[in-house]
Length: 317
Image (cartoon, rainbow, N blue to C red):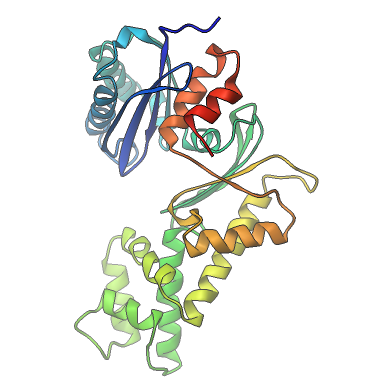
């Protein structure tokens, strides 16, 4: 019999934002909260915990914390939960919120897959600032592909798009071609007051900026419509599909879930990726819903007799 007093808490903690969601076991959302990034690999431990607590406190505003029976925290920097200093800070904040239930920390890949499918097995492909694919078995991560970071990998990510845009601009300068379309947009973004910029100036400007500057150039690619931008987008779709394919066997029919800002249906990278996956005979991919809802569903999974119906309520297609 369904416990009508029980609620669950799901958190999706990233580098730029932290989101929390409280739901009952019928899928009725009772509260939501949002704060700045709480990834402990991207922020000092005390600041990360503060942001996680802020999002959670807001979500619990109209809910008695004693009603929370289970909680799942999806976090890109989940390995940090094994660090004694961070864990102590987290547990102090947890208790300070009035929460007494156990918390299960898991990777953002597991949360993203749950936010896109109620099935226990499949592939999740995340493409945003970085990129990674993961194999999920029985709702748990069993293997990852790529996700090495901007310097060593993350092909098809925003970092990669920005780098390829800069390289295309440098190639045009090396050939003595006038900059136009995407390449002119890159020059304008990096050297706005140097209309006749040369290759050394462009290289110097890129190397002088923090690495995230490359990712910030990605919208120049997705908003352009010239042949150079189109070619980069098509290659992004190919390398992302290659990454996902490495998590699957040839006869695999389990779901593929896409997550991240670059793979939304309205983004040209997402559009090209879906076409590429279809051409390879993969199942039609699902788009992940809100990560906090996926985390809440995982928290409720073993507390409800009908997890699939609960998924449909929390994460309607």
